[in-house]
Length: 597
Image (cartoon, rainbow, N blue to C red; front, side, top):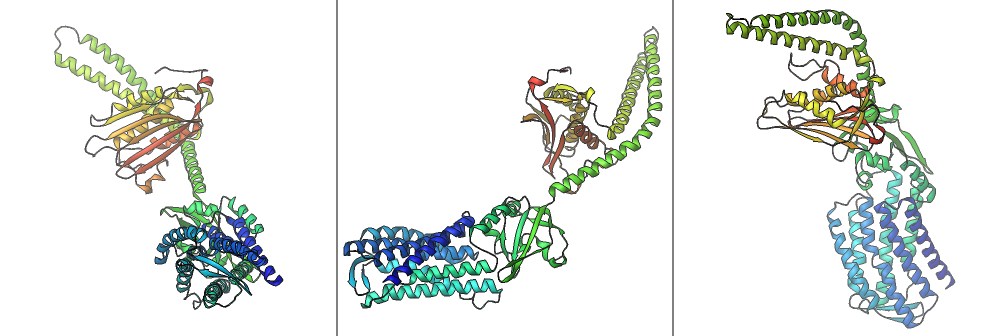
């Protein structure tokens, strides 16, 4: 009797310890919660057996046997659910029966605990209490045995499959452990009582032994279940870079949370898969043992391609030797963005250096041409005055007025040339702080809409959504030119489109940021051109229609104001350009405030 008490006590303690260790390692993992629930039910079953061994009267023994149903009836469906989850067989046809088994268990448990339909009575024998089964006992037994048998049938091919030692050993322990537990439970708890033979239940001890051997195999091959490894997992989960453990046979054994965030998937969707499922080119380039990090594309669950650096493999060893290799997966999107920004900045600076010498050569003849045109305009105005004398024809007067209009248009063209030359010369110079004052952004944008709107055909509807009191410190004419250029580009994107396309210009605030958004329903920009739109002299417009300097100058101006430009575009749907500038709070923006239009 003492030995039996010690066995039951050890079984209960081991089951509780394994349950706690698994939850301590990672309670968020579905498979861990299912295994822990399975072991808890086993501990409850063994604990009640311990109470029965220590002695009880007939009434107490009957109640304990009925309470024991809470431990053994759910074991089958929990075993089935955990096994399917661990082996990534959630889409297997038998997985569809899991809800049915859970509902059936929930329905039978109240009957087993509160009525005599499952356990009708108990009889005292030499080996202890023996149960007499009720009419519903076969149903309860099937709810335990059927899921276990289904799992054993699904796993019948595992024993013959070639594979690494650790994985195969673990599969064998679980397979034969479940088989022996089901067989012993059926013989000692069902067959012997039915034929009137005394028996000592050892099913709970077998289940606990399977848990111990499984934990030892996992520990030997690199997957311990105790708290220090859980602490190491927490450290890995704090990393910004993804970490992935590739086990024997090239199967993914574990990942950290950063990798799951990167691919946008759950752990159950990643573990037990292959690295090539997420990085298709991982097996097509040089072998992972060559020790070189590789620049590859990672595919997310949604199908997006993310540029990553896959580190050289790091060998991982357990107590039984090497158990796999670990890789560090680093997201390169931010790095590539910074590299592109540096390339664009270098190009702009190069253009600025080149333009300074050209600017000096252009400014003088441009200024000379302006002076001569201005004098010509004065002379022409005098000529118009003399043409008012009697005797001169109306046709001559009309020709003179047209000539003056042409001279004025030439002056505007010369002024525009001078303005472009000055803007190109500013490529390598930051905006000067003394030129910047606080302005209401809605007024700045409203003026830009008036200037650019004259170029819009009647079929284009310009909608202005301007949040008031959004203030920025800026050089107003330059920001006006930026917004005007964006609106003109949007208007030009409507060429050739039918209907009444819409252009929306917004001013909004978001915390410490002021936003200007120009969104059109135009032709859009091809993906291969998006990376180059800020490059000097690059344009998607036909030859003679664009200089390729509008967006680069605008981008440079916004950067000089401490802001940034963001562009999102879809071919055939339209483009959205967002200018982000530092916002000035109204209370601190009174100095130098300029509301002039």
